Length: 300
Image (cartoon, rainbow, N blue to C red):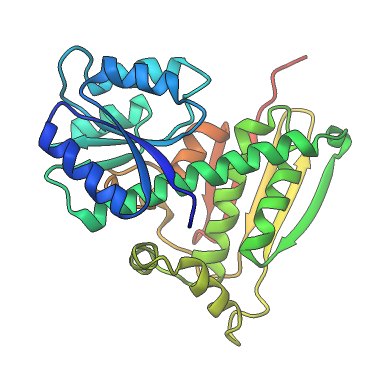
């Protein structure tokens, strides 16, 4: 039997909490529940090493969802756990306020079961992937800061984790940049080289066939020789990472921020999060098949 992922659901609506628990347990999730933010924080502290996602209601007594987020982001032992904000009113200003507070996944009430499961799967998967890369960093540390420049090529998703770990260790703060490096390279492979559209990825995520489709397209004659080129340069004043794919580009302007209208989608936030959290500067060049990322290390 597949190991159950553990999630925490916090909601003062007993009926909604019951439905969430039933729907998630049907998909082999282990669900912890709490009736408000205060109780949720207590449960989180007891199970902080096991919880992989939090479903959080916005409006609750005692401690509401935004107050819970403030405590979560101030605690470095739990701040990386992804939060899915449940809200009956998916108003743009509320979504933007949540994004600023660190909420990058949204679920509008009353929720659609398939959409809810897709978002939870995405959040749990992102957390597992990022945790695995952080563990790789701990095992990978060498004197890589001596590297001044380098060029790399990657074609397959399975090679991205290794390359991202290697590249992250070239930076003063590997944990800060590793998510962004990985997200941008994956984006270059799937959307750039292999031409998977936003709507296609939505369907693939929902069906659980995203990786299968990637492997399928890698064998297409028009895609089989395409590679993503990554160039790393460490200068006196900055560290530059240039990622170039062989695709036709995309409308990158739409993805530089987390748009409220896409906040309930299972994907589409990687570029914005990379810009917000991982790099000091991130810009796409021309049609969008080249992205330039910079870190400006503090003066010694």
